Length: 210
Ligand SMILES: Nc1ncnc2c1ncn2[C@@H]1O[C@H](COP(=O)(O)OP(=O)(O)OP(=O)(O)O)[C@@H](O)[C@H]1O
Ligand SMILES: [Mg+2]
Image 1 (cartoon, rainbow, N blue to C red):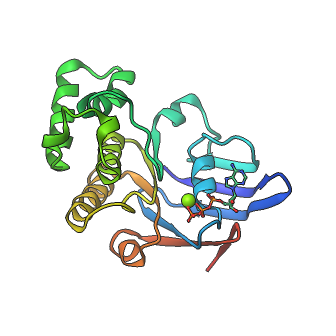
Image 2: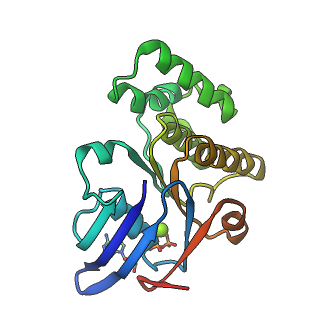
Image 3: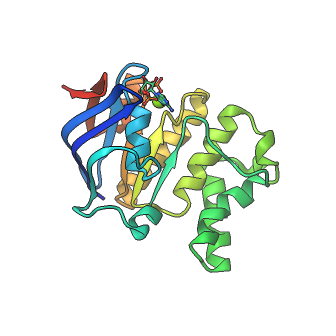
């Protein structure tokens, strides 16, 4: 879905950390968000994800303000992903469970995504015992399994080995091309943004630059 931002400002105590007059992220495209540490990238993603409501301005999704339905159609993979202290496959099936997907279909989807991510050997492991990179991989699999309309990724491959980066990038592209899912991805990796992104937004001190 299209994400459109108007007159967005966000402050922590007295410090203005986001100040965006107008920004539209196109439907069905992969938009990269780049910029130095502390420039407001994660803050912006949290606001778009509907998790941070303490801001001024307007964020619209396909020209509509956020609703419960819209909220259910998007997901954020954070820099330090949060997984339940359950088995990996239980974590991955969770978004399907809460959306009341039928058992057989749920099983098929979970199996399919585990195969595509090549994480079969992790599926019975307790998620709290995973390494940082393994957690990031499982979190992306959990985000993609329910085919959201909007996928928000905050440095999803920052701890990942080159082979796994290839798999994750392949799956992000596949999601975008096949399901026409919209993606916003924060990355410090310029090469990655060239490989994945249709458009790039540059943030500096909370402002959009070009
Ligand atoms: N909970 C908070 N309380 C106060 N200040 C915060 C809080 N979270 C973030 N900030 C400040 O807001 C600014 C933007 O932070 P943000 O995490 O969005 O940056 P970022 O662009 O994601 O950086 P990085 O590349 O390091 O992840 C920073 O100056 C940061 O110190
Ligand atoms: Mg950040």
